[in-house]
Image 1 (cartoon, rainbow, N blue to C red):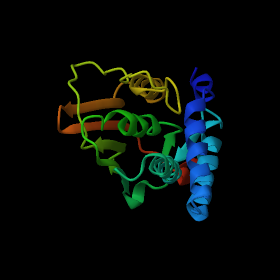
Image 2 (tube, rainbow, N blue to C red):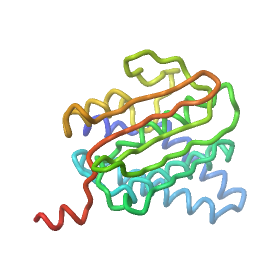
Image 3 (cartoon, helix red, strand yellow):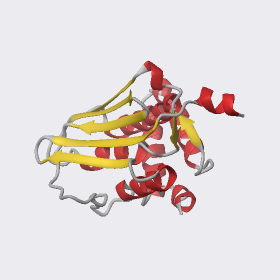
Image 4 (cartoon, one colour):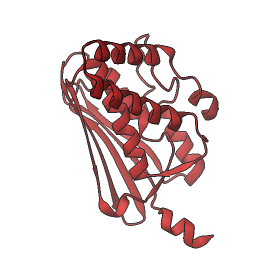
Length: 209
């Protein structure tokens, strides 16, 4: 199911990105256009790979920065993106497309009332648990005890349908009950998503082979 969702690359995302690149070229911003093309290539390569693949946190955050660069090219820099990864977590392994949907959701939904703000991704280790947090200082929302579905306003985004519940259920299936996604949010104050999964490193996997 995830593999099928990955391949539903939103044509409007591609069209708008390529239209932005065309404008950059016409305006003589060739270096920025080249950077945006490279970011788009890297993002698409990540999207069409093996859905069951695990990648390092370092590579995941590189992909997030590619996405943020594309959004900046399309919409200007009214939404800032920053990532902070603890040095001992750079080689930690995470399922592909675990953080991306939440960053994408923040870019598209968190700043409808507020016109500007920031999206932060932090990755740290707590004992044998890897903790990834995606926070924004945007509009916020009211949530109950259950995980909310991704907010919909008629727009289809890059990875159609890969939302909050999808990532949560995927982590539960892979790692068991103690792990998954939790969300805190308040209207006017922003949203914080917390993802917990076992801490495993690339080096550990190599040593076990």
